[in-house]
Length: 255
Image (cartoon, rainbow, N blue to C red; front, side, top):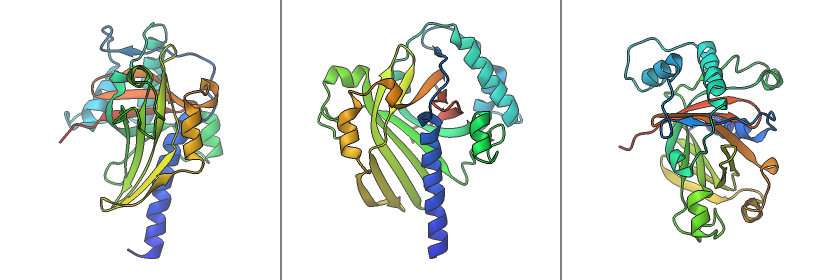
């Protein structure tokens, strides 16, 4: 691999991870959003969202909706679920989810030179961006700093956000906390892993990662990056980031 190509791949991977963080890290609107899921009551899914999920999974030959139409559908779903009173459980998010669609708010798009437009589908043939929610292997996990088992099962867990571009994979991981009353999942990336062709070439704490891990459980929500989930189904989830951007992920099925 040439030096120039290697630098390009690394920069692209860092962009993918940074954008996933950016979605959840900027300060949010003050509106508190409510969640609706198939587990608590029947909600008629917006046809545009349903068609999008089916097309992304290859379950239909129907034409995929335009980014603008999907943004409108997500906003409609968000409005529809805002009135519902339901508390998200960590169990509903467990698993691996692939980022399929992203968009920012108008102010953020202006700062980014309107690069995102109204929204953009992530081409899986070019880059694979995945987020994985899980419980730590043990209460002694360095990512959760020895929290009590009851906290691990109900409030705290682990997130791993990875970007794969060709043979290069960059992954950031760290603790999460579910603020169930507002359906906001807070997170911090405190560890870094770099792999080439599936072989780990670097793994360690991010800058200040060990201290941030120790401080995470005692932080207030206003001091944390987070996603507010407003759409949770078996095959897809959608959330608004702290900065106001929207994101849609689909479930990665086990091989």
